[in-house]
Length: 314
Image (cartoon, rainbow, N blue to C red; front, top):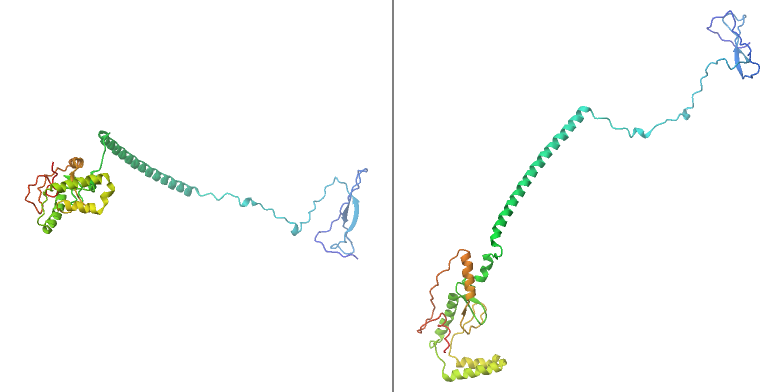
């Protein structure tokens, strides 16, 4: 006897209806399993027989209960994801904070604008001041067109005496070496040399006159040297001249110690330059200082160098 199961469905007086055969003769339909339930009276009302399977032809026109497809295997589940999640736009800033940020930027730009305006005004004032200064300089230079502008301080070293470091109001040049000094400075320099020589030679007379024979010999010697210049450097020629000439001090240049054999000569051009530059700087020409020399002689002094170098007889 087949196994039966109790059912909670109440017994029905009428058995389940069976499907009627199809009315379409010319169509072959697929066979569908149909379960027929029958109930046995011997088992009582609460039991039913196991269903028996019958194959009947059902028309396709009848509706069938939807069948549920089996769920796919877990391994066959494919997870679809997109990389667009990374490119999603950032969250929007709340409107209140965005407005506050914009206001801060606007205030900053306003402050920068004010600062730039002040800088431009400052630069404009500087340009204006420089332009005015340039115009003033051009106005001062217009009257001096065609003239030479010199700094008097740059000429000071050339106009000062090497002995007293003052301006050479009465400059004299030494012909043997070319150095220039003040008249008073040269007189004091020669006076010191002369005083030492007089102390060693009391018979010295700066105005002594050569004898006729000595003068004639010196003239002949000078003519011989003129025809033969190479003999001028001979030592015996210098010794002869020293013997014929009257004794006298050996004056030298204060700067280079070159022997001075002739009178210093006044430099009138330099004298004029010194006075012109002094007048331009507002300095007046001083009065000529009085001469005071050591070792004065009894002879009457006419020129500034008569006491040191004898005059030539004409």
